Image 1 (cartoon, rainbow, N blue to C red):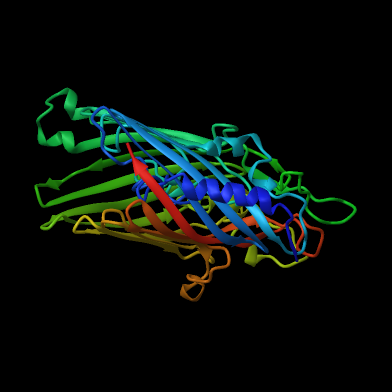
Image 2: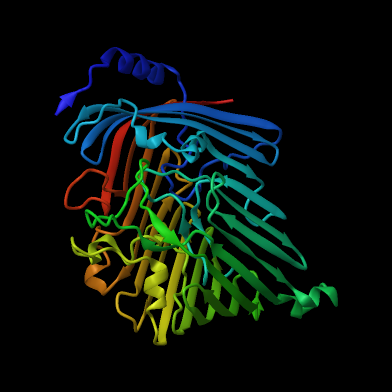
Length: 475
């Protein structure tokens, strides 16, 4: 272990961060958590917040001083968030590194786009909504093809994505793109309410039909292996090398809100999906969504779904852990040291038997201050259970808290909360005095092992945590 000899530089940066009188408890969402608070301050003409955080923590085997500068602006419907996040290595454990500023954070073109925290127009549910930023749980349609997709779960690679929605009385559209610097995963859905062209006020306008088309044009097919060493190949930016073949997802759907008043709405839906990859698969989803509006600003949403999973088909193909599963499926823990991991495309093509599946989802908002949600999906197939849990405290004065846990491809309940192969993201921020906040974050993501050794070229879980102080002002 060695302490880096740049204390004078670190002291200057730390003093700058502490004396800037910047950073807001509401100024930004932490490290990929759903951006419930980011950019949500209303503005008639122009307003903004600016701030800075200074924190100490650990990423992998090393300890870092994190300096985080941020600013957000709202001009009518337009919201802009900028940031400068720097990890400064202060304790360097084995294997030792030569850099102070963590080089893996800034060694690709896409990494420099992290300076843009978000660009957002309007809010979800408005006529037109668009957001450029980290994707913190993107969905398309009923979520049978893309569900809670996260584009940044590899600690060494940042992606700036795009999520847009258009909603008219007669229909609408949705579009998602994973990475503006190098798009691979993208697509969307268009839908119509046919009866609105006949009678815009009739009950039958509750019926809609839609079609979705998504693709992973660079979907990994097989990892490249060095013929001499027998190890998978890793490039200079810690990317696994692989051959690829596009995966295309196409779906037809319909839904009908059969009952709706001020308290309850019930919407059954039917999705027919096709997956075109190494093989062609088919899936059927029959479900219903019930929304309940209760007194005291309390809401509840319940979703139940039956799934028929045909041969060569996987439901919710683009999900919270897809960025890793596309390379290593179902999780790093499933392979031995002498085995080359299989990609999701290859594993899905091996599912040559149909199966029945199910999905249940519950979301509750209590007093407009606490949001809880959970999703569980399973089927008759082995290692085919998914779990997603989320807790947010978006509106409690002086306190911001968020936790997201996702686990996919596990065998049974005993593995559901095994942290290996899971995504866990948590943040807490408490305003303790005037513009001063205390903060803490924890992230469990993944990283390719790039050091020579028995696990070279494999994905491993990496814990990233830090705690510190922040300061802010609004204008």
